[in-house]
Picture 1 (tube, rainbow, N blue to C red):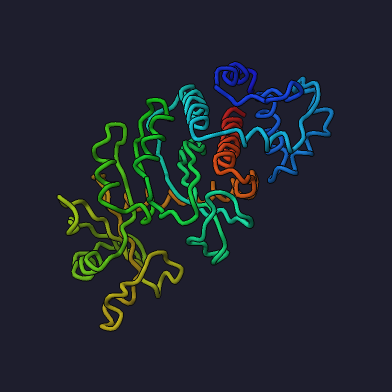
Picture 2 (cartoon, rainbow, N blue to C red):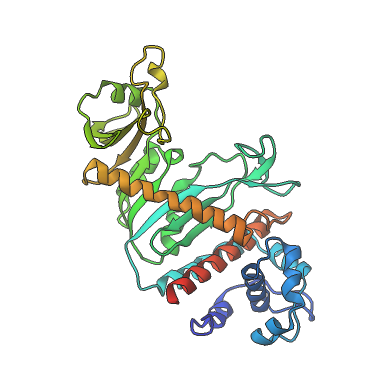
Amino acid sequence: MLDRMNFDEQLDKLPLPVQGSNRGYAPSQLIKQFMTSVWCGANKFEHCEVTRHDEVMRQCWGFRKMAGCKSFQRFFNKHTPAVNHNVFTPLYQWFFGNLKYDNYTLDVDSSIFTRYGNQQGSAKGYNPQKPGRNSHHPLIAFIEETKMVANFWLRSGNAYTSNNLQGFLGDTIEKLNGKKIGLFRADSGFYGKEVFEYLEQNELVGNYIIAARQYKPIQQKIAGHTLWIKVSKGIEVAETSYQSPLWDNSRRLVMVRQLITERPNATGKSLRLFEQEGICNNYRYSCFVTDLTLPPLQVWNLYKQRANCENRIKELKYDFGADNFNLKSFDGTEAALNRVMMAYNFISLFRQVI
């Protein structure tokens, strides 16, 4: 499949770091062998030794000899921010430019990669699994329809969820090579005026659904709303317009409430602001800011499909070792993880092909 895609030809066009020794391996070999190791189950650099001693794999690729794990570490450590941008931007553009598909559903989410050393960029931040442990806090953009990664940024562990989201989205749009984002979805960590304005002003972004953070004004808006429509057992929906004190204009707010006695595992949050008064304590609420004109139930159903990106993150961690390939160098780690993302995309493409 890679031969039919002219993958080698594309690698030759990229400004890849070169080895300083005459005995060094070609960058194209290191990239292909690294991805092959990931496909064979490697989830840390030491596991790349599996392919090093695989004679059949060596003959399949036509390599004179196979590289060891230290070769990959030296190669990725040569990457800088400029190299990463000049290498991965055209690589993603080539990949998505050749996909005969447009109008993507883009889901953006962040994750926690726990670190056990003193790697660059690792810091103490929100880490529910390992409180107090250093971590990285990357941003990942997924394409729902094709189950692919559209962009990956590594960030410091103490970075806020939506930190520099506008820059990330701009970079993602550039990497999608002119393709349009028909629908953008994100959780409440990305709720904010700057995000809404960026999405509304960008011509390559169609519509958006972003979960609302249930601040005091929104809780008051929910508690004061009286017109709810029952759409299923224990589920009611409503809609209204809402303008935050920080916003220049109002936006559509879709609200969903689920009766706890009939749906004990319902998602959402209770209205803590009114717990003492006993108001609305029987329900869990979810709210979404959107510019879609679809009925509230359809908006909610569309947003619920975003849960698939959580499965993509788990797959990247458990099957592709995304949270274990790390180096002392921050830029080297980001380069290695972008290679992991491309390895994941090739497998997703292979699934589509077969």
